[in-house]
Length: 197
Image (cartoon, rainbow, N blue to C red; front, top):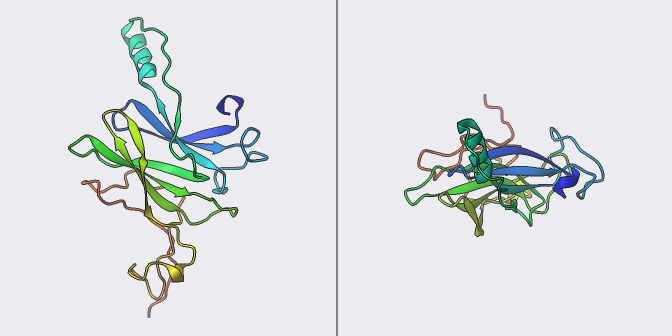
């Protein structure tokens, strides 16, 4: 229940059309499933979901205040949870728009979550209609799967030394993580270390 202070909001990004904001809502305790408020710096296991909220009427009110015109007190639509079935979702990022006005929303996710302070994340994507400012929730796709054991990761993945790809271990995606054409996402992760003579 957002009105009772059970959630903390952060990581907002404007949608490409500018009509909505996508953001993360962390369970802050006292209203959600957490017994008490946990810190957000080192407690990456804190339940978090992605939401989208329209801001069209808010922007109209702000614009009319600046221009000294009166606009009715319309409220924007309610928020929409984009990651209803996921325990951990964060770091929303939009790809550049394509010629048909669409783009991708990518984010870090771990559907069952984890109980330690950090864990392997997946990279998920949703198709986003940049003209209407809405997600196609049925288009959800796992781009990079969670790696439970690095030795069991995809044999076709690149290796460094004898180490297979360990999975994604990062708190946030880079702010500008897409290639210019929007087809590649650049991220960093921990992949161990090796010594060479």
